[in-house]
Length: 310
Ligand code: FAD
Image (cartoon, rainbow, N blue to C red; front, top):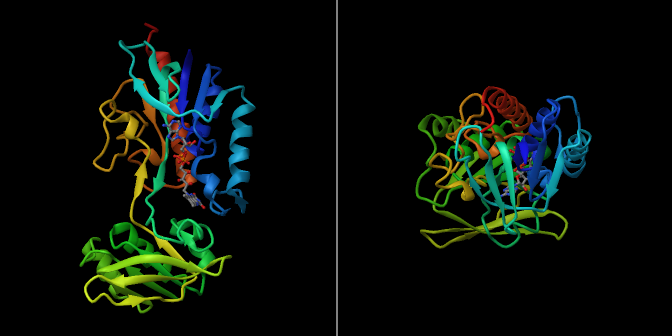
């Protein structure tokens, strides 16, 4: 059994593991894929003090840092269910997909999130070759170029405003007949000279030359007209889905499925903490996830020293 059992091996889980292990307590980490979303990232240029790295290199560095402290690292394991401790100070039980169980006197949930895909031809093929999901991360790669943003909710319109200051032009494509973003954002967007908005626009394909994306096709759902603008990039902003399905009914989730945490990383269940993209913490970024992971581990340690073992 572990004093601290961490679920998820992305930036949040790795930071939690290092902080917990440095307290000299028995720490384990279970992850389907160590590195998490960073494994899908080409360039990382905003993790402060590291001017430039790439995703796989960053993920390898996370794992090396965790292993240096003798943490039990269990990868390629998916957690199916969590049973909170039956009494304060007892052990929570974590059940894996393969039926095996692990026990932790405290648990840190750091299962991250995934971007919702358009599921159109070319999207997967040109991912990181024009198809992007994070304007804070990849916006500068498209400096001076023409890009599209898919989605007219708050994240899509924020992305369009953000990108308009960097790229040559932004085309916003919204499937519905109106933008769902807050009015103040829509007003700001409408004031920008290099942004065009199309409503009732259904993206049908991402096109490219085999190496990189060169454009996309979209259909006007009212007139049926097809369009095929040339574009260097497309930012897909149709939702970030937290990996928390397995927690339904056990831990309080927001209406978006995010684990509800307080400022110290406490969840609705004593002894269970959470950090990173899977939670209600605003701004989903590596540097934020690592800080949150450290915080959750310190809170778990605080819980352990105050709660007599049952
Ligand atoms: P994740 O990285 O999502 O890690 C989740 C972990 O949990 C993984 O190990 C996963 O395998 C595991 N897991 C999930 N469910 C289970 C389960 N049931 N059982 C066991 N394990 C499970 N941020 C930046 O700051 N800079 C960038 O340049 C940048 N670029 C990005 C580019 C792309 C393409 C993407 C997708 C994201 C990018 N981000 C960037 C965002 C950043 O990657 C995330 O904010 C960060 O990885 C979140 O860390 P996390 O640990 O909370 O979750």
